[in-house]
Length: 245
Image (tube, rainbow, N blue to C red; front, side, top):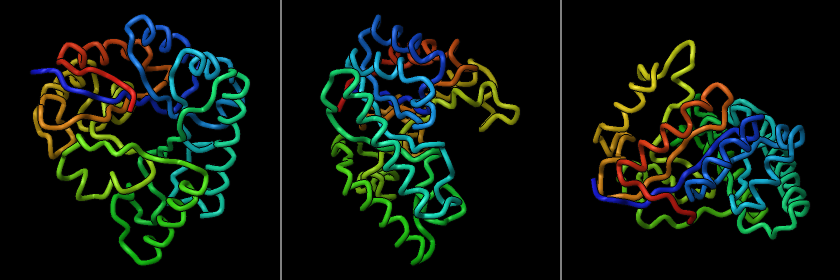
């Protein structure tokens, strides 16, 4: 596979292992965006400040990681605002100007009352609710890069590039390797590698497809720390070149 650009996004930070992951990324010149949980940043601000001071971007991943379709709308808005203030404070403590405001919904659930991952609201009320959340993000200054070279048809048809929040084009399913009920049979590192080798670009497995850039999702989870560098190294071997937007 020829080289192509990808954006490395890391959800659910900060764990006690976040600094270890940062050091691996620094040693390998790999930029990334950490989508962080507000409550965890309050508990352990030090690795977040360390990430900021070393050039990583901190994104908002809500305060306590709810399914936003199941939470009261006012709670969702408050979680976003509260976490935004925490990130502002940590940038100030780090002595670094906040370069951008990025947001990702936990579980990819956009809060639109679909009962599933909210790709497409199924009701007028769901659409209104989604629009309220999106406008709240805009009012706080959140943006999504244009990603003009993310060309997957399914991604554009679902409007992912029209929303303020970040979604992803490839999920490493790192968490599934250690889950009691693995998703899509990803129950080992070898299975995760095999999924990366597939070429089904319109089904979320396009790492080997040269026609689009990718937004890669991996997690800052303690149980998967050991495979974090292995999965990223495998993508680099495929020719992915990670950069910031």
